[in-house]
Image (tube, rainbow, N blue to C red; front, side):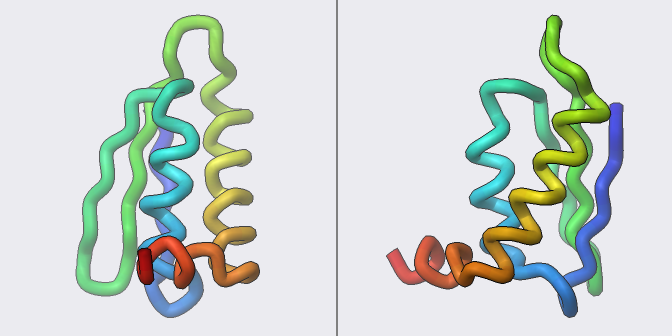
Length: 76
């Protein structure tokens, strides 16, 4: 299992949700929300590279936050 932490003051919470949805077919993913951080735990499915998936998921969250994709998803 790999754990990622996304500070709420840096990353949009809806961006985390969008990323989890995008990567759910490649890994079993759990999400926990604490006061100032979103915690994502992922376990890669058989045949998948967990370290690579974790990095890609983190990049997806960053991109969605920067591009405002999270804001658009939250509005719909």
